[in-house]
Image (tube, rainbow, N blue to C red; front, side, top):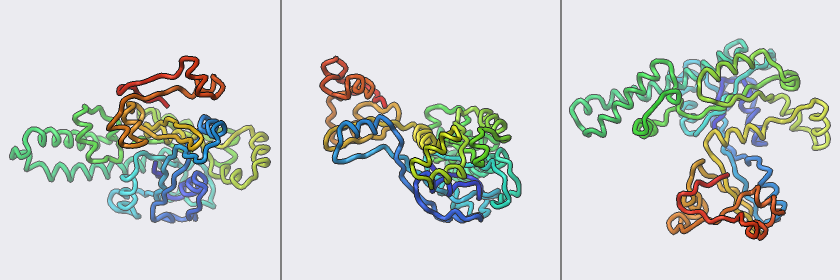
Length: 355
């Protein structure tokens, strides 16, 4: 997931808190010039329980890779600010955390001179769309003459038609992921790696006061804007100010403060939502040597999942022996009990591996 937004909306502060790292977060645009990347563990109580039971020599949780990308500005698609470099960094990620600012305060300047998160999101989406339009227009212009001459045959003609359709769709002001595409068109369009095809999660950065009281005047219009896009994207309010405050506390002080304010940190939830936005899930292997969460795409079948452990398992797949975490825990966190209860199953090549 790449962290995207205008300058000074809290992207690098959020990244620091999320990843327990320290990259510059000063109050001026383009502070983050090179993308910063970190891998963060995906919180999972099941994994923690497996570790407590097996007490393994090695522990490998599921992780989400997060990239902090410098702030975009209006005109980035034409190269304004450090636009083209930033847009290339966005092209390299699989999904986007859109961070938008819903807090006021003169101590942190806003690049547009006002606080309006809906307008900020419009700017970002427009720049991504314009970049996609520029890329597909160049492809259409490059291929037109060859297709008109019949070069490449039917396949080239079909690919060109998909690109033209995408060009018209983007020119109408819509994102690629808002369109309806055939499986063949998706195959052609995936080659382009459109920015507006990527899954999105919207993170609304509030002041500590608004986060604790669970109220902010921008939340309702933001929710309406996200819903109107029709993609079922997630929107989460959070607060860098609040998270930074509890980040500095020891465990006892943090526990007391959260109880007093009747709230909790959002960071674990943000990581999980980002992970699932990429259509990822994981299965576990566990024993005295290692407890590990293996990340797979949702819908992966047993041989594909086995191949994440070792390619030989994919090539020579026979069967998968599986049982669910819930059954294992219900049977006293004991594998022998699971077998005795008839809850240990053998699955074939078409079995879709469950989380």
